[in-house]
Structures are given as C-alpha cells and as structure tokens.
Image (cartoon, rainbow, N blue to C red; front, side, top):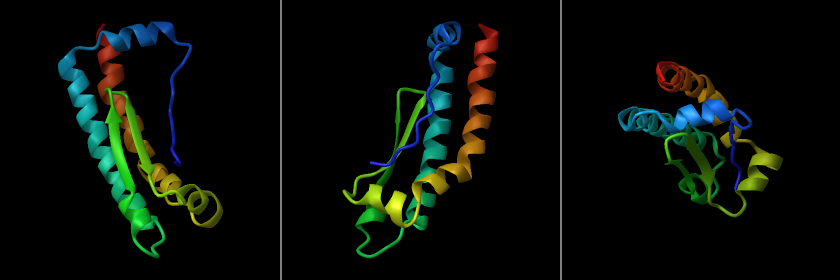
Length: 115
C-alpha cells in the first residue's frame, strides 16, 4: 500500500517529553490529525482514477496513537496506479502537508515547551 511516513528518530529528549504530554492535549492532537486525515482521504479519493470505483472506495485514513496518521489504499493495484499511472495519494498529502506542520507546531511543540 502506498504510504507517506514522517518519523522523528534520534532525538531522545524530545521523545521523552512527548511521552509526558498530558492526555487532554494528546486527544486534541489526535482529533486534529483525524480532521486532516479525513481531508487527505477525500482529496485522494477525488484524485484517484476511476474505472470500477474500488480504488476510491479502498482509500482510508486512520490515526494510531496520537502522532501517527496513515492514509492508504487497500486495492491491490493501488501501488502501480500511484507510481506508474497517476499519483493520487502523494498529491493529496502534499495538499495538506502545511496543515500537518501547523498542527505539529501549535499543539505539540507548545506542549513540549511547557514541560
């Protein structure tokens, strides 16, 4: 499945502080990611080419934990469409990447500064 992943590694102090963010703030970040994920999902569905509709139907966004947003397509041929025919997940992600960065700055970094 085509996926875009942002991973922060090697920053032990930041990771320790992220674990100490209060639960209420984690829920706010998760809610923000769910909102952005829904927008990316809808955008990818609109951008996906349609023959049978299965590719569009198979595109879903999920949030794991409070920092992981996954937007994927379950259609077995989604990879080939994305990489060889017409990209739909990548452009949809790029369309909302600035909102993800803004959410990270406003919600997460503000909380890390308080710790």
